[in-house]
Structures are given as structure tokens and as C-alpha cells.
Amino acid sequence: MIRFENLSKSYWVGHQRKLVIDDLTLTLPSGKSLALMGRNGAGKSTLMKIIAGTLPADTGRIVTDGTISWPVAFGGSFHPQLSGAQNVRFVARVYGVDTEGLLEFVRDFAELGKHFDMPVRTYSAGMRSRLTFGTSMGVPFDTYLVDEVTSVGDASFKRKSQAVFRERMRSSSAIMVSHRMSELRNFCDAGIVLENGKLRYFEDLDEGIAFHESQMS
Image (cartoon, rainbow, N blue to C red; front, top):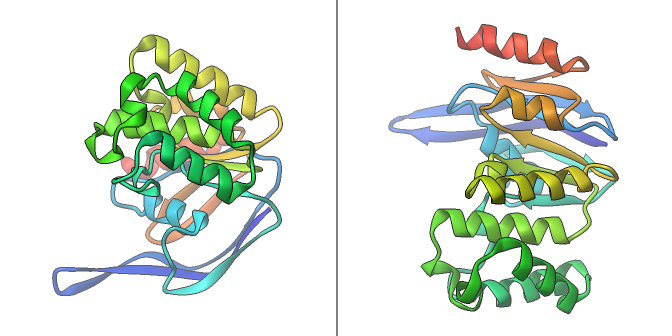
């Protein structure tokens, strides 16, 4: 369960204040993998960061009864001066998981080769995404926050990413952002649409997709 209580977030854009989350009060059910949809600039990534606790809201709060991952494609979760391996060790200590086991999993999964022992600041965006995705998949969470990350890499890596994510979804849930409706249908069973600062829940994913597409047209 994730509950938003009077949640608001805004930014200054030029000389105007843009409200991206507007006094949101809503409870998302447990055991559902949710497709988060909305037009570009609607605030999807902002909402994901607030849920993860990496970005503060202006007002309100989020209440949950489970563990939530960081946004999987958010490379800012890792210290740029530390190597990929050092970052993974730090994450293992923070979340109380076996350090060597997590290191082995990420080293094998992310396919970074010698770069795994180099500073994250030297990584390309794709390499950072593979590191963050691999690390998050190696830590057991009740809810995974996923932002387009299964599109990273070549066809073989995409298949591997989708396979490990599907395996995690057997015991966990997710909030997923993707511009590919086919991917959302593959992994999600309900939808939420962010529009004009409001979040609307759809028990029927196809109904949510239809509403989102109507807002885009």
C-alpha cells in the first residue's frame, strides 16, 4: 500500500510557479503493478522521486507499509566519484543484504566489464542505467520504481532485463513508466494517469491507457 496525503510539488519555470502535483490524496493498492502514464512534463519522474524519498514534496506526505526501491533509471542515486563496485557495496550495507552476493549479481548482470571498478562519473547514461537496474534487482523490495530502464542495451540485454524483472514481479509489485504501451501491458495490471497535477487510478489497465491516449490527442 502507498498512500498520498495532501501531496503537492511545484517548480519555478521562469517567473511562474508550475504545479506538477496538486494536493494529491489517493491510496494505491498492494499487490498491483501500476503503469504510470502522462504526457511529457506532466511530472511522472518527479512523482517517482518523491515516492522513493529522493526528492522532498512541498507539502503533504507519503505513507507505505512496504519497502520501495529508488527510481531504477535514476543515475543520481550513485556517488559519481566511487566505482560501480564501491557504490554496490555501499547499497548492500544500507539495505542490509549480503555484500559479496550483491556484488556478484550486479557484476554478472550489468555487463560493465572493467568499468565496474571505475568511477561512475566515467559511465555513459546507458551504463549508469544498467548499474542502477542491476543493483535494484539484486535487492529485494516490495515495490520497484521503474522508468524506461528495460529499453537499455542491445536486444540480448533487453531480454535479460525483462526476464529478471518478470521474475521479481512474481513476489513484488512495481510502478512503471514507459512510452511503449506493449511493455506496460506485459508487466502491469492496473494504471495511474498523471494529468494537470492530479493522479487518477484505473483498475482496468486498458481503460487507463485509453484515457491517457485521449488526453494526448
